[in-house]
Image 1 (cartoon, rainbow, N blue to C red):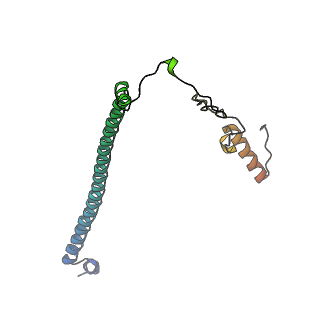
Image 2 (cartoon, helix red, strand yellow):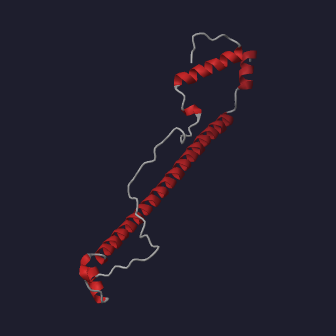
Image 3 (cartoon, one colour):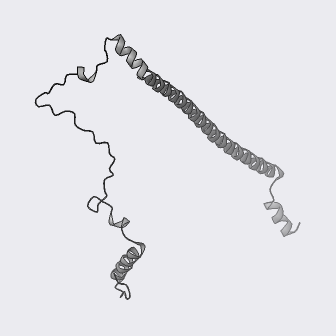
Length: 163
């Protein structure tokens, strides 16, 4: 044998080593696919569980909303004019005419305070505003300040920038 063939034969791998390498690569690919599938199944299972929890909460919300509506309907029927008149009659109350009423004046009692039911939005004044200066600068002003800072840092003259 010549020298070239001996070198090739010396560095050529045995057939069983090639088989072991191919089996190792195949098993690595299978393990990688199994890990990816496991992660996918885990994420899908969690998403399904969260979705089911959301459905349960929405179902509970609908039940509670129906109960609230039923209670509001019951309250409306209990406070209707006919029911209130019947309750008043059952308790012995009777209607009085204006000439049958007696008004008493109590010293020191000024009556109920009037309720202020008007909705007035509080005016936003500059004294109440507490925005940091970063949010009140325009883009041009910010750019000018930044360029001036760079110029001062690097001692370069800045021309044409006015404030």
